[in-house]
Image (tube, rainbow, N blue to C red; front, side):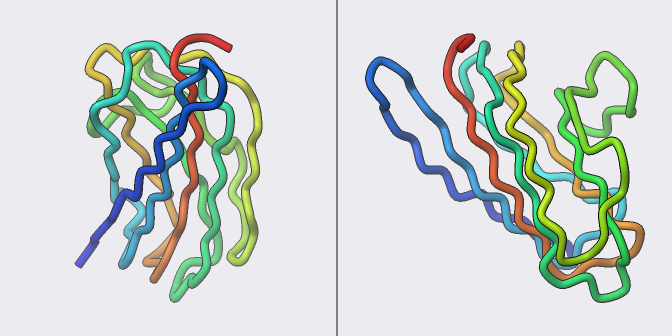
Length: 131
C-alpha cells in the first residue's frame, strides 16, 4: 500500500524564508502522488532532487511537480519535471530557479516509476517570494 511522509525543515537565511522538504515514498506506483501544503502563494523552487533507492520492479523513474491533484503533463497545472526517465540508483539533481505561483499554497508530486518501486526520496528547497 502506497505511503508517503513529508519532513519539513523551515529556515530563515538572512531575510529569506527557506522551506526544505524531504518526501519519502514507500510502495510507489506509476500514478502515486504526494502533497506538500501550507506554502506561501509565491515561491521560488531552487532545488528539486530525487533518488530511487530501491527499485523492486522499477527500472526507471521520471519525477514531476504539479499544482493540482491528478494534473496532466503539459497542462497549466504541470509545474516542472524530469524530461527523460532515469535509471534506478540515480540521483536527479535539478538546481534551476523556477518562480511558482501556488494559488492554494500546495505542490503535488509524482515520482512516476515505470513499475512498482519500494522507495523513492525527493528533496525540495523553496524560498518565499521570487529570488
